[in-house]
Image 1 (cartoon, rainbow, N blue to C red):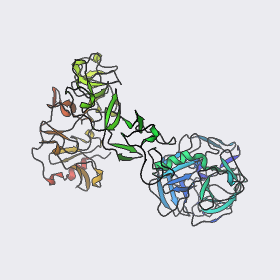
Image 2 (spheres, rainbow, N blue to C red):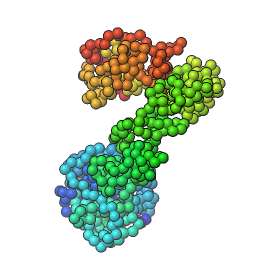
Image 3 (cartoon, rainbow, N blue to C red):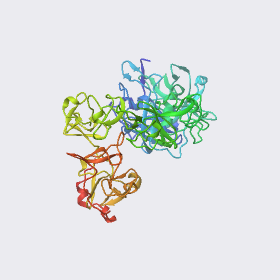
Image 4 (cartoon, helix red, strand yellow):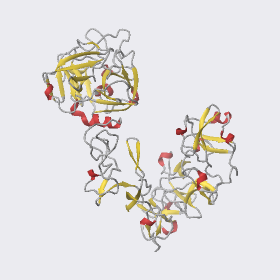
Length: 612
């Protein structure tokens, strides 16, 4: 093996010459014939064509190729996914081009040296996969062979590739054949089949169902063709391939089992499995149970607990109405997050209690927060959960818990000991760890927003309450907004973003033309404007003390200049911060809702907008 070299220009990235001569392309697979068909065999070009490799569409949007075609020698990860161009056609100068959104190879780095040959993680594991951004239409993929190919010894196979011939460079697709001589160490051996540019191409088993059984990898040093060629055994790498297939949204086929996948390809996941709240004896009897071992485990996979199917949830930010899998959201209505202990919970059928924070209670089930506790003053009441020193509690309250531990937000006067982020203080020594007391509240040093907890931003080197605004939040300049865009119309200003269609904007906003561009403009009252009911304040808004605001707490922060505080009804809502405490809102910019014409932004405004 020490004398075997990778036969692909991709492995010679940076060598001379780095690209093929596109004016003299005439080189097929060894002793093959020019192939105008075999559209499932594609070209794989890294970095726009610094080398040529071959790949195979094994699904409408999944390409199987060689590891060394998508990963450099001595690197421990593939090239960036944006580096690849996939070409469908028979001539690299005239192909339909596709781009990738995902790339993965077998793990580990490999070595390629002209004197010693190959080393490291390469022989028999020279396999990579690419997931395309879109399906390749009009091309029938070639499936892989999933069982071992040991019966292929002595049998003929078909080889297809864009590689060179002994008498010319690479770039045209040619098809030929060969005979399998032996299989050892994850490698299918043959001879005089592949040259540079054929790497990553398929070894195809012909029959009633054509199947890819090998991936072209190497040949003997210094010869083209060589007396020894090696293909990676595809069936040895099913985990890698299946992972890419699932990520690509493809169905693997087979018998349906309870594993969060559509195993039998009928567009229904886990049919016949027990739903949430239904009886079970084991985890694998529940719908949305843990994924197969070849995929990363899901933290919210269904489990069988006390004879009933359920799944974990976070009582701090309870969400049981949907489950996320591979970028898709599947609704799971009729569930709520029931706290089990501390900051742990599980989704169960039913709904939370109705009692708001501060209401006397006898059990967790009575409270909207799911947390009924005596904080130490002898009175059990509904309280919001919190994590110590995480800035979760409203102004004037403190989390009755040590840092990183779970507790409840209570009046700061009930908490003995050091105070956490955002909690009242009178001196630096009252704050946890390296915290400092600034303007009557504990904070900590920062160099950017990432150094602060959720609901805080970095201002003047210290963490301050408030997030840079989301769409619809009040703003005075672009830096106040997470989108980097503070829009204005008439006497209103709000955080916005550029858009092309309504779906680019959140609920309650329309994509409105404005001076040569389109921006997300509110269809309802803005944060801080006058209101008479919650319905006037948009899908997520509430009307408190006659002004539109929103609920706040863990996972629901307030914009800059606002803090989470209790209103007259005991609800935790965003209120304007002032030096002397908090008021519900600043004076309204306009008592009346502006006419539709006011949504149009002036050209002068757009001139000052900074895109990020």
